[in-house]
Length: 165
Image (cartoon, rainbow, N blue to C red; front, side):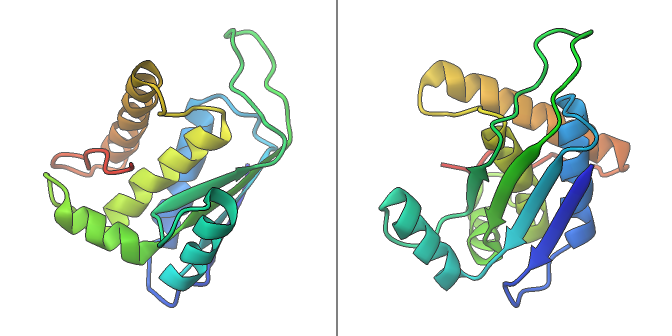
């Protein structure tokens, strides 16, 4: 799995954890091991520009996903996953920090970035949360992936509750 993490934000983030949880999420979703993903960490000004340009919404947001090859997890256990470019995930640590502080179960900026990374991966794989049933499926899968990764890394305490809107 080729995953690049590029921090252009000026904020120190745990790039290793972002890389690790992205790799874990893609493996869990059975994405081809030669697929490629890019994660870019930006400041609020850059995120706001992207949010306006692509969503026509004001202000910065926490995470945006830009799919490339529209890869999907295999539907059957014996099906060979396709290889390709997953796309880009853009994260904003300043928004993540505020969301972590404001969450019902307060958590760190890095924990929020880990959650947002998984959220972005799921969007790249075609998951969405517009409808209640889609939201339940996506957020359930997101929690299972984050919890599995945290358990594998010996991290204790409650995992971050979904704060993504």
